[in-house]
Length: 388
Figure 1: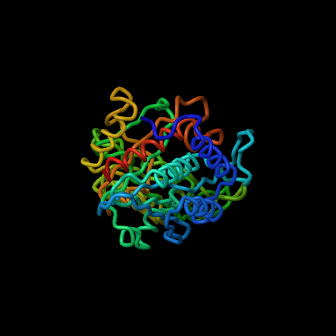
Figure 2: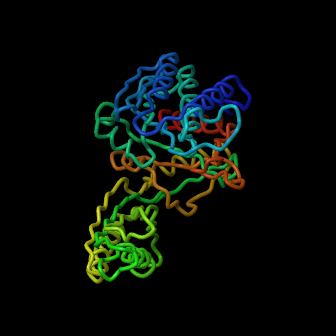
Figure 3: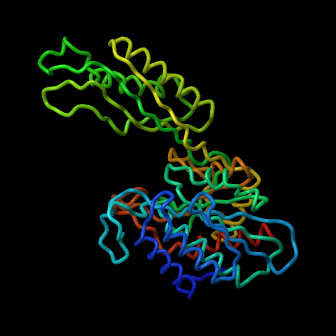
């Protein structure tokens, strides 16, 4: 039986919360209004609330009416992206250049709905820990919360995360038994040549030419050095250099990301990138430096907790609506840091069929409010299962 029905009072409240958060997006470690709203609601539900973990993170605890020593952690991310929203509906972003383009507004509202329901229906044994995490979008907010003692203060038996997934039909879930999301590494390559007149290139060392050779060479790292049965991606996303039509610049910077599914692949990619930067720059009498930074490891589910998620989602929507082990995503998710500390699992909830230009991180994206109740029901059922 559904705990929260579509169109119910709590479903309508979640929609209201979600749209308010969507209209006031805040990016990494600046989620002060969002955190304040979360705190106000959690305290109104009667939960014990802790703030300040990971700068703007919020954690709340709820004890069941029956005695028990077990505990479960449920996590939602709360930050937005630096994206200019192009929607024109009433709850569009009020903040120039910032937008909830990944659905964290929906994740937050869903977990708040579960917290309210469970606070009013405490027929479970043990403790629920609600984790509202900042700075998921490339700023390692999960690591910041862990470094601030998240699991020392709240020693959960297992921790769970969930993300909406455009492209999976509404009413369906996806559960992976292993890898779910790729690792995230970022890099900056500085190529230093010698600037000169564009009409006299022989008097200098052209770093743009070197950069063009290096861009092509870096694409061979994955296609010709990694096992074809493994997965990896190197993407150059920024190229900075030059200010005038008639001047060859002194230096060029290339920046981008690398994705993989294991530490071994990350090590191999980084090592091969360093070799190529060194050898190609030297071949053109330029100097090259690679600054390579690891932001988040691959998100890999623990098998036992994945089995629990499979059982809970199957009970909610039926076996035919639970996708088992679909291809993992090359996107990254810093929930991986929590899974390094505690057993747990991270699943996808269908956000509906993608329409043109409405996928994640797109300026026309909007979370599907019709899945809020299903998401909250998942959290409720998972808690009741874990703390039976």
